[in-house]
Length: 205
Image (cartoon, rainbow, N blue to C red; front, side, top):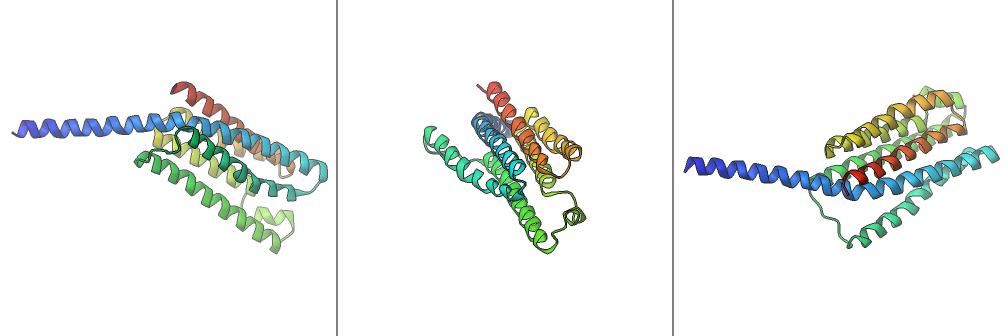
């Protein structure tokens, strides 16, 4: 009787482990296309903001970033619709969604703080007084979210991509300065995200 119970417990644990691993694989297989989508949008919007900012000398072209989710979200929903209209929910998908949702909240909070501070102090040097620039903060948060997502999904490619985005982005930021060239941080992040999506897609065909 006790041996049967132990076998049942072992089998249950093995089944749970197998289910979680299969869930990770399905999430990774499905996430690859979204990485490519958002990576491509990051590249396009960062280059658009850079060109317009460089050409006009006005930083208010950064407001175009608010358009990106308006473009990307419908495209992402369309992908879901093509897959059958329903995405399976499980503990792994909720953790992954929570990671990126937390990143979104922090990124928006940092952006709002930066905007409010700019109204109080218009001196560009004043922005440095509260830490690094908005772009550097967001790129670090982005890299952290991506790396933590890789940890949750047990995928080395995504972990490395997050490290490259966060740490590599900061290195790039301190190399190019505070002007419109900082948009290349997001071009770099988009390129890393796009390549990551292609690699993950190849891993989980």
